[in-house]
Image (cartoon, rainbow, N blue to C red; front, top):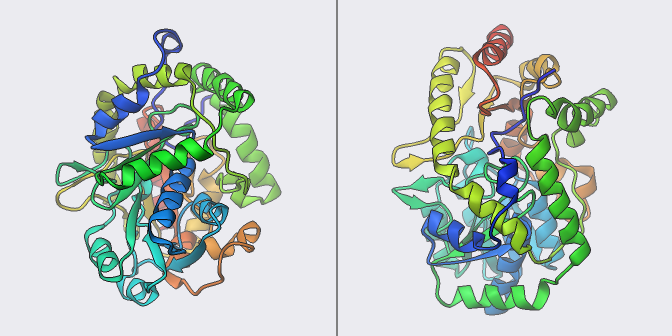
Length: 396
């Protein structure tokens, strides 16, 4: 058996487990061209550190996020003791509904969080303009978009701060890791102070991550993915546990610990291969976007002019939930890397109810109901992709 992963993660060479330690934070900072940057143990940890630093600077408490985004975003806001507000998406878009966003911003708005979802580039400029009018900050959630650019500049640098994730399957991986970036010389030391005060040296947690990274280097292969990814996926699908199948269930406890020099060294060596890998996945995505573009009723989210996103997966929208669900029934457990970005809008996860307001967000719910993703892994061969396209043509 072979199985495609849900996203195009950069495979690690076992040889990259050996060599000099450290150096990853600086190498990643140079890769994106950020004036200031820092390493944390996850993208979520980076978000927490940014939020705490901004709260200390302004005293405000409200954080506005998209109603369709990763549940970890809501958990991070709750972890910081801040207030979450949800903004709907624009119709048939991954960007904010700007009319609704304008009505949500007030004198207590600490930050607005546009999201570069699935490697696509969010429209940050109008969000930044609105934030400046109300005295808020802009934090770019670029967890899935390390290497994406707008007008030649890395995502994460148009707003006040941004963060990336290096979790398993997120392009470059430290198994878990994150990078925060900013161009603000006043904000950078505030984030660094939050890191020094809150981030511990948790030897056991870091030892566990080192073991997981070594296992990732050995097992992130088509021959092993049916067991380490496919078996848990199909078990969750059999139970009807769609949030677990989509990987949307997280602990409310957000660990904050330092990343060892060994994991940093592994990441730094892998980073030297990332640009070539992203060029390969971009070329593959462009070929396959052309194939999907001929299918009636299938809309694929693409780059706009002046944007150069990355392509961990292809995110598409079908005409209605019924046809999306029919496609998932045939493809989700078939080993072809088909899944959902997030199975629900934030208000619809039962376990998030203590920290997520039950706001009206029809466009976010519509996107959750009609969207799906196709892996852009180089291990999903043309025959496998043709099988996916055939199912989509049949149902859509």
